[in-house]
Amino acid sequence: LYMAFGFISLILYQTWMVDYHSPEPVRAPAATGEVSAPSADIPVATGPVTAAAPSVQMDTTVTTPAVSVQTDVMDISVSTTGATIVKALLKDYPVSLEQQDEPFMLVSNEPTHYLVAQSGLLNADPNQKDAAGNPLPVPNHEMQMSVAATSYTLEEGKDVIAVPFVWQSEDGITVTKTLTFRRGSYEIDVDYVIDNGSEKPWSVSHYRQLKRKPGTKDEK
Image (cartoon, rainbow, N blue to C red; front, side, top):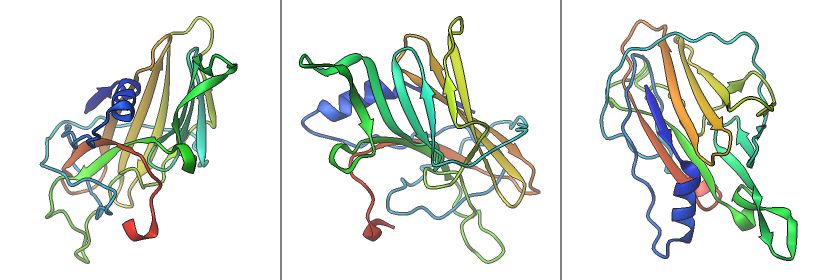
């Protein structure tokens, strides 16, 4: 299951368009496993796509509010809640001619400049429920994920850095969501590897969206 998108280009387009339209959910291959009831902030799945699920292993994980990612052109913060991109500073582009030392902030979770990039998986089969009849859990952008380190830096001599986030269900399903950054690029690739250790099939679909205002209690 693999989905790559240039989120920076998309954000620029969405931010500077006069008429804003939210991106529609994108269907992506799914493995066999489980999922949860979406809030008003989570799109509705349009249908399942199936694929084989390779297994993934993570040795040591920690849970932190955000992970710092430094490349040659960007300063990124990724929340461990859904691996949401909550900050993106463009190092080569200043805020203004008068503020040459201050990089332009393209993505931010600050209330006055709010724009974040969310993505995740959805339950593609409404019949997938637990014994109590509740929708099965799924790693959408509201779910907490684990990561092996609190900061990542694209070192000299390397062209790629991958940051894996891991979600696990109580039934034995492991989803690894990896964000990949490349030298000189503003694109961020996102891919999922699903290891279904449960005894039931699991159908999911992929979505991505830009959120331009903080959530409220009425949206939950």
